[in-house]
Image (cartoon, rainbow, N blue to C red; front, side, top):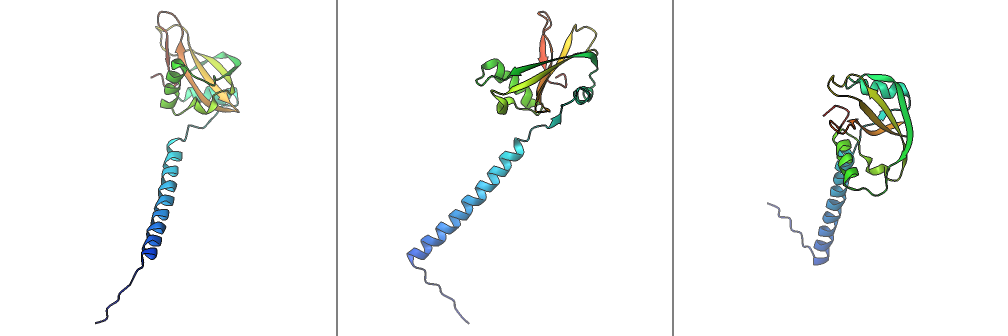
Length: 154
């Protein structure tokens, strides 16, 4: 029977512990960055043309009227509670406006003709930056029945 012995000096033990700790830190950093990136993937929807925007609304069953309003707006750099609440709606539907603070975006507004018979005018607002849809909503701004919801109507 052969016996194998290994005599380790304190410097050798410290070096092994240091190497194992370094490898563990590298692996944990890689895994946490990978998880964070996969969770923050936002919806990517091309909205550079009128047809693409109308088709996107049609995926939710919405019919749009012929006219469309277009204007350039700036998403504020600092948000109050209203903007934070609005961004929660965006996050729930796969968008996030946080990356666009201070940016100029184009707001397209379409009248929805088939929301429901009892609701007056409902519009779809679509925020577009560099040809990509970055957020939006359906809303009725009337004083009595006003609401603001995501594209799905929820």
